[in-house]
Length: 89
Image (cartoon, rainbow, N blue to C red; front, side):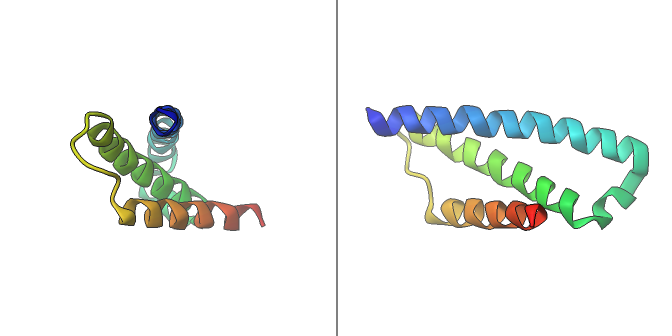
């Protein structure tokens, strides 16, 4: 039960990341076009959005009892988190 509650919480947070990053992506593309992909900070945010989307897809499958989160999802989340942390340095 505790694992399912943590998974639901993580799903909600990742869904929020997807929504906010999608808004930022649209605004950047409207303002700067494809030049918005030139900056590492924005690229790391787009990577975080993509990884959050993959996490949400596999989290729904796990919540429905149709499998577990693959190990590569955990690795991708770690990579995205590391990329975001570099922007804070």
